[in-house]
Amino acid sequence: MSSPRFYCATCQAGAEKALKAEVLAEYPGLRFAFSRPGFVTFKEDPAEGPALALSSSVFTRLWAEVVDQTRDPAAFPALLARVPAGAVVHAFDRDRFVPGDEPESYAFDEKISALEGVRDFLAAHPRPATLAPGDEAYDLVWVDDFHVFLARHRHGAKQLPNPGNLPLLALPPSAPSRAWLKLEEAILRFRPVVQSGWVALEIGCAPGGATTALLDRGFSVVGIDPQYMSEAVAANPKFRHLRKPARYATAEDLAGVNPDWIVMDMSIPPKDALGELSHVIGLLRELHGKKLAIRRGFLTLKLNDWKYASEIPSYIKQLGRIGFEDLRPVQLAGNRQEFFAFSGKFRV
Ligand SMILES: C[S@@+](CC[C@H](N)C(=O)[O-])C[C@H]1O[C@@H](n2cnc3c(N)ncnc32)[C@H](O)[C@@H]1O
Image (cartoon, rainbow, N blue to C red; front, top):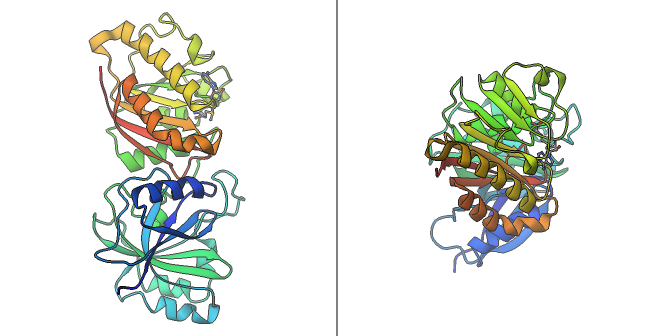
């Protein structure tokens, strides 16, 4: 009889229940074992064959096979000793704060790095700047004072090569909102072609974090939002503001606008956002027909209530009906109680 195997999954603090539901839907034979904010473990018993890979999960940031864990500081050196020489090691803390609520001094690895011996251990395991799909990495995860997990995972093509599959972006002082982080993280993860001179239509653009990222990358931006933009964005000659709810946009408002990218981030329930998005795309279709230029979508939907998480497949279907294809839903590390769908193709 084979012994049980454990898996750990990391996510945003608050998303554990949604993650659990997704994992158990894919592997009904797994049993939920243990959970802390941002960290969930599962037991496979009996464990036969290779470790399970997770094929699709919106809320799982990292999925790894547990090697060992300890709640005893005296046993911590023995845990470190289980990492083979030359192995790639990713050391990070489970999420303790909802993104945006971290204290100013926060660092993603402050807890694990403060443990005795960790700095020297990491210096002895220098981290390569990139990983190829299939490369193995060990994960040293601070879960509590004191509880540390050692796990291992295979690098996935859609993952970032950083500890915890985190983007490690810093919000620049020029960005008027955290939405800058979301757009930049999406570009890092999905690597769309970015061409200076393209046009973005942003629905829900105030106060202008994502617009700032787009303008800095050479885009012209038309933004729809009833709220005011930051002064710097409003004064930028490459930005035009339609200051109204998207549902009131008219063909006249959008005359001459044939966007390459659609960016959406409205603080309204998903069904309402999808309705207003559909209205705007309908206007663009009327205006441009087969010449509609849309090639990528960066689409955030608020989960105003976590109960909406189970509706994600239906939201994705609706985005497909609107014309967005090659849809890849994920909860970005920069997302709050919301998820993001990248669309790599639009059906004209
Ligand atoms: C999370 S904020 C957007 C952040 C913005 N993308 C940025 O980069 O700073 C959500 C925005 O949705 C806007 N909003 C809410 N309902 C809207 C609607 N019906 N049409 C357009 N914008 C809407 C709000 O006014 C708010 O500015």
